[in-house]
Length: 68
Ligand code: FES
Image 1 (tube, protein in one colour):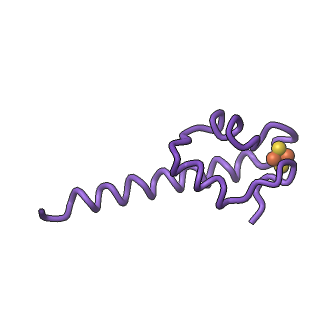
Image 2: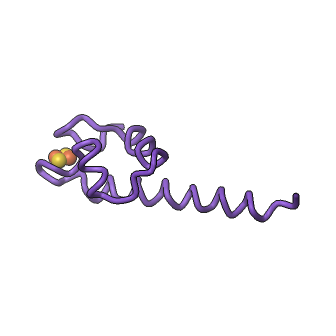
């Protein structure tokens, strides 16, 4: 789904940027232009970024919790 209509950025692109190491809205703005024009997408983009980060931490915690 489109998150930023001004730049045509989708939720998939935001998740991919998070996987590539993007950790803040500032970085997301530099990488994809999200939130740099009207700003209406900022809340949704931030939420997707946080969700991606928490999923990464959850997966890492599960990996570390498994017996060797
Ligand atoms: S919708 Fe993203 S800057 Fe306008």
